[in-house]
Length: 492
Image (cartoon, rainbow, N blue to C red; front, side, top):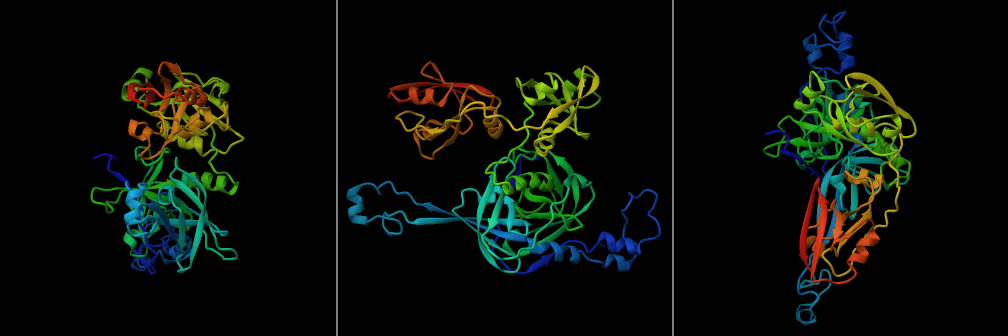
């Protein structure tokens, strides 16, 4: 079935209790004390297997006791106003009344609840969870393992990584927290624990191993680079913790592969090194995550491309184009180069390069290993954010036209990077379309690049405002969407 069936899950309720599931296996340090004087020749250094019945009776309880208090439940409430087509008609309001909660045509409020898990990563009360858990929330409530409850505010919400950082509103309160580990130190076969609240049964701990690393075809966020584990992750674990045997956070549980809605032993977690980047941006007061910009468009290496390049296997990221005066261009990267390493770490595809590059700190330099015409080379690239080379001039179109209700802005390298566009600047993009608006009815989507309106070229938002100022019976519109150019005639 591939990974097309991956489903992101949210779901947790405030419930007490602790359920510990999984095999009873020795904690590494305890096993080592009872192990034979030297591992078998085939064993990895520092790893052993239980050597006796007593060793098999050992428990994960010490790790759980240290980590579980830092895993919380996240309530996200969104107040939705029920709409009624007659509410604005004075005749019907006269007979049925109006106003929220009025009981007649008055469109009472409806509360939508999004429920999930989160992890406290700082004693001050910073909580990391999945962005989809709190998206659009009007109120957020945090419930701790010890049954305390607090309101929380969103410090940073990053849709590209599906991560959000919250601050608990608990002045003077003390909170247990987890140390964020180095996810690059994980190896396939390492023991891990997944902590969350599946199916609303209460905080639950499940045990498994790291099944795979660097999974890049999951499809639940822009940064496709996930830890795969067979520790049972079910609906409600979303935003919960994946911890190692030292009690460090190594991932945020985010998605599962499932045909039934339950765990099939294939779960995915966002690596801790990406979590560090988002948390650091939130601590610095940023509302968005600032990441390094490479300034190059990349392509996956197919078996056919590998053959043409004389490669033994299809690996690396092939450079399609290089932005003028970007960091890559200044370092000497060229179209046709094959990127195979970042700071000595192998690059298998464009997704792994995006992850490795996106987790590098701004302000320094990074070594880029490439293959050019069959020869290995190393380029030194500056780690800098994409520039805002043109003002965004963000505006919501309100004139009578098919674009009414669309929020548009000018594209710069920074905007193109945020929205994952294949253009650098000199165009206008739709960033949001209001539900039920003329733009929504016309079929416009966020990410559409507006090229022409009634024969006039659109290069800035002021061009679109001017082009839609005068009503028309018909609108000839050309947009770019997903690499395709679409021209349509819309009614006025």
